[in-house]
Length: 173
Image (cartoon, rainbow, N blue to C red; front, side, top):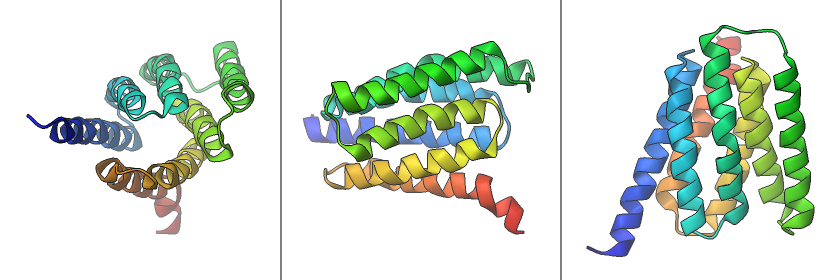
């Protein structure tokens, strides 16, 4: 079997899992966090194979965040806890570390930080998290357009649409 075809099949599975998790989360279903955990692992592997090491690391760091989001949504915890603040602090430190230690470009750094901080805000059930995620998705599309990851780019565009729907659509109509 052709390795390119195999990689495109894997890319499709990664993209479908990611979009399915976002869709479930916009519907307020905590199962979306379990799909998000699987999506983070698969996306991390995908980024690793394609040489996006910083983005791969971000996805692996997001795994405990998605587990925390599942726990927080399952327990219907709405108040900000010490754990929330600690996780936000870790996310901010990681973003700063990416930029200075890995000599990453600014778009990868901002995209990485957007996914970390946006995910934490979504776990807190804040619409601002969807907006930040949408901006991170836009930057990721820009980054991936330079490669031949057309399947992933298409699904990132769908993710942007999901975030727009969650962030703005209900407020417009």
